[in-house]
Length: 108
Image 1 (tube, helix red, strand yellow):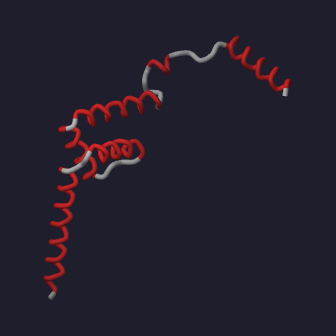
Image 2 (image 1 turned 30 degrees about the horizontal axis):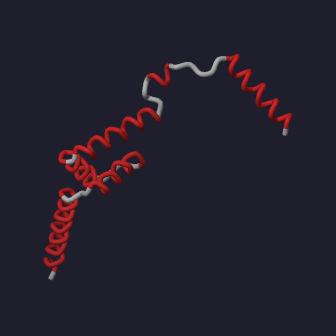
Image 3 (image 1 turned 90 degrees about the vertical axis):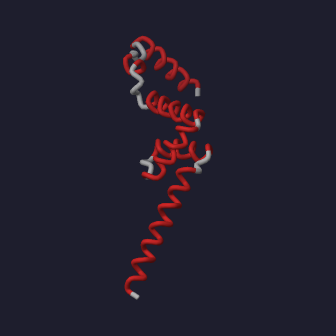
């Protein structure tokens, strides 16, 4: 029957929607932390984003962990503000380090 393929497709779509809904509503803390970490490396799917946000609404610890990850990423990328404004080594310090390195090379 030509209509049966269409019905099967709709049935599969419904199953898919329900499986995503189940995933969103039953995300565990260990899965949430994995998604939080994955989010640093790749964009999350819509379902993963929803699952993570819903979990963070009911789990304060995971919400705080996510905020900490975001803060660490911000600091590591140099957008922390204070780290970029601080000067590097002075020229005299660089010269001292260079002299010590040359001295060590001669001792080898």
